Image 1 (spheres, one colour):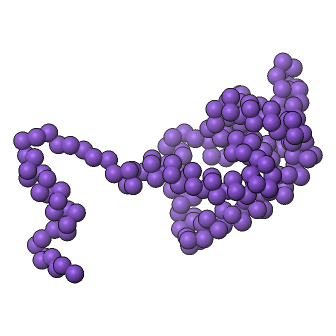
Image 2 (cartoon, helix red, strand yellow; image 1 turned 120 degrees about the vertical axis):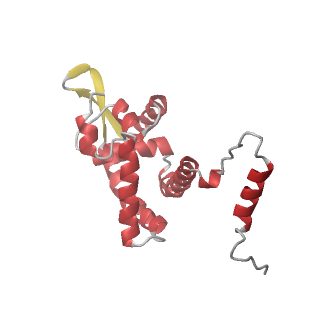
Image 3 (cartoon, helix red, strand yellow; image 1 turned 45 degrees about the vertical axis):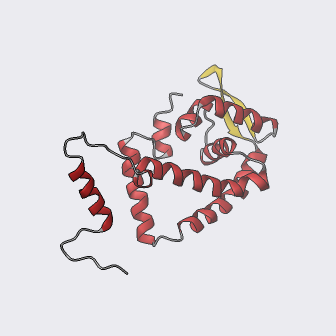
Length: 186
């Protein structure tokens, strides 16, 4: 193993210093290391977690990701809501949610109900079959979440939740069903 003296910077830092010395006259070139770029890391992590969870609902229940998002949103609500509400909460394009709703209606998992406030609009809710599916699926997904987070201590899990909440808040994302309901002008 090669030894470095205390005055010599590590190899990675040394190459950056040497590059700066060579390029004093040239404009500084910025490089983006994707593996340290937080948006890339979050996106990659989200895709991997989504894939791990989809294995629980796709093979066994025949749900794709948008259908799961509709089921999950309707499942935690006590009142029917609009497809626009689901799109807003899940940050999924409304046409994707519309296709998912249509597929779930064909399977009799979701149904439309008239909006009491505006008879021109329909709201969505789970059917009895949809509610049973939701209640069967949730424990499986919660176990999968625990498996995914098992590499973290209880304190690290709380810290991660708190830190994600701060980022979500800074981006003005809805974080609770109460917040979503308060903004339910959809």
